[in-house]
Image (cartoon, rainbow, N blue to C red):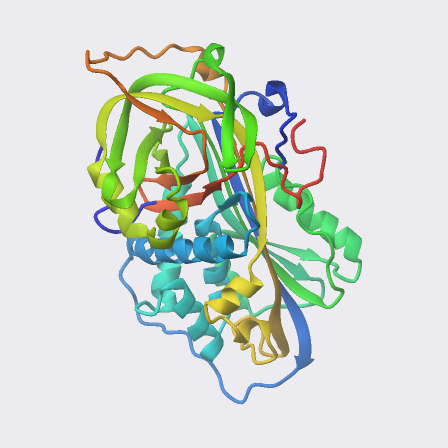
Length: 446
């Protein structure tokens, strides 16, 4: 495997009674991970600017998207620690740091003054300017848009704009060019119809897996910014469904659940990090993407969570060694959502949500502020890929005894895209059978 990270990191519905049939959802996906994020901007009182903000017109050389990987990874781990601190015991955590960074960066193109400074500071972009960040995202989204036949990866944005409200042309032009944003008008005075229209858009971009993200919209809404990440991959080394068996998963010392445990013996990139109390394995997808699974030693999850950062990911990636592993991995489909306003306030993003907000790069006539940021993500893992999994993979195995890796207790998961060094998704699987309370729709898996 190429060592591509160079110190800058690359990278609900689920129920105990779910049958294996339910997990196969529309053909069998080896993994399906996706996220959607909504950023809602509301109208406040009109105001007039006495100063004008000039766009820098000097040219910038093309910026490599890798410049985003280190700050985006740091931001992702800060998000993890905040979400984990707020999560109820045993709750799954899963989100797309890339999706959230993209949406906030799109907002920052319309932010000015202290509001802009706070956004850039929390994202880790203080050493960059907006033009460089924009160019980096343009390059990043271009790179990610080159999906191969064996995987699908869609990362994109949109702005649902209030009918009759006209954002500045420079803002619309920038988010279209740099963030591949689609722009459409919505009548927010018809709250239910507006929510339905935005939900239809998100469903169309996430293969109908996220259907009802918008529940209520205030009539004074000016704009909703949407960011979505959809990934569907096929394992490079599929599991044999005939070997999947019932097994116990120890959620915590008092809770045990039964899971469908997949089993495969093969050659994997593997590393036991005794200094950091973890065992790490890399499961490649066909294409440029891999799932890194981090299993803390028994009783060491909190210790691992307290110290984990992008340097650990880089270190593990560089230390991985191909060896025989007898892998036991549960099948699961989980969903998690989060309201990010409190978390971002903790990070110092306060003005954007208050009457002090300066979003004059979006509109100079209308005073705007951010009213809501919502994020929802789904992950499904099973044995194979789509129909391509019928093929058999033969591997030459050395005579030595294989390492054993049994994921029968909570573990961390990262989905990494190697060419852009991006962490597409990350989280903690506390309970592979848990129903997330936030997802009640019976139509997730049809």
